[in-house]
Image (cartoon, rainbow, N blue to C red; front, side, top):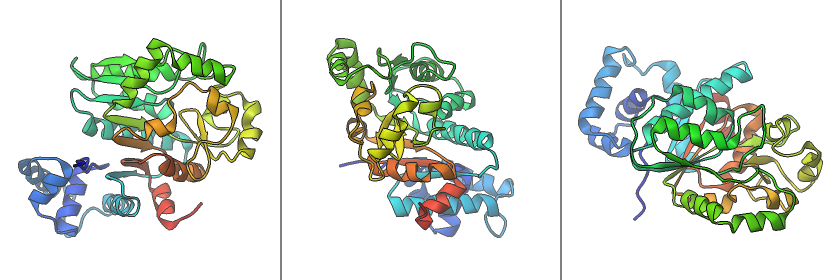
Length: 317
């Protein structure tokens, strides 16, 4: 029997209050859904009252986010959705996403777990919001190869830094993000260190992914992970987004393009077998990419901003 992941939120207190006061769940039902003790649920509800989150109704802004979360969970079948406030600036949106991701990781990652991670600004900046944990069992495994030199965030460093924060070992793919030809990529995957890293990733309990839009300003092109001269041919092949430096079409399928056969990252069909997948993505320009990502892998938890959440529910492109 498949166990359902615990229901998590951008605000545990408000979500518990919503389930109790709006949806009419009992404290026992809330405890079961949120994987908390009944005593913890009682404490959360009591804190909502003392902190003024609940008077006659739940705080308007927080309630709006939780209402969007519940609609997303029902519409797309997510275990949980986490919605955070929109921002007028790209920098503010990125900070909000990183903060929300850190909250989700703090609630989701238990001792002994293996966490598989992609790369990028969001994951890297979430580190500053995480409290370091004492050393213990578990591991972090990178899903993308490395850059020999970069003024950006080297994909291999994200797994290493996250391992340091969680007090666990880290494992990376010891190969460049992109190699010259697909036969070389195939041979590299046969090497013992890469086979071991891939096996560890496939045995992970939880994966954390981001998704980028297919535009010249996308991170993979701006920072040289993928040479920008491939942009047009990837678009002609149907690319609308990239995940783990792999390019996918609107249906979530990897496009038929040499780049996808030369990238040293786990293929998305393999990643889709990891039991629980967190997708962190926000911003109106990423809507088509987010839709494609949801089709590419079975997302357990979606983290996004309120504008994207509403547009996803409205069916906007």
